[in-house]
Image (cartoon, rainbow, N blue to C red; front, side):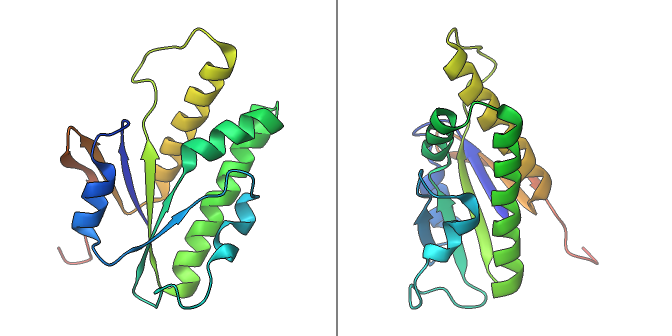
Length: 155
């Protein structure tokens, strides 16, 4: 699994396209249960073993989740379940899963309670995803910086 993270309009999409030009893209349905996200993929969308799937729409899902769930611990559990589903799909189908996540806040604490919750959840998502991925790419102003790359055995 790979993670591309950066602020809004930082160039994440372009960076993913440069690294994975033949990848299929899947936007998360903000109303869907995380366990059902990948079930919406239809056969024949170009996903074959060895292919790549880009998963986007995390911010919209987080915002919708805030409206339906008052407990941040349960939301963190849902995020963990979503990441587990993605890892399972990667392993079971021989795919490279690519997460595109917007960085929120950059240290600025919003005044509103809901905005603080959104920023915190986005931060937890980024941390959890980064801990599970093989490579983490930070994108800012169109510049792509590898933050972590797992070396292959023998490198």
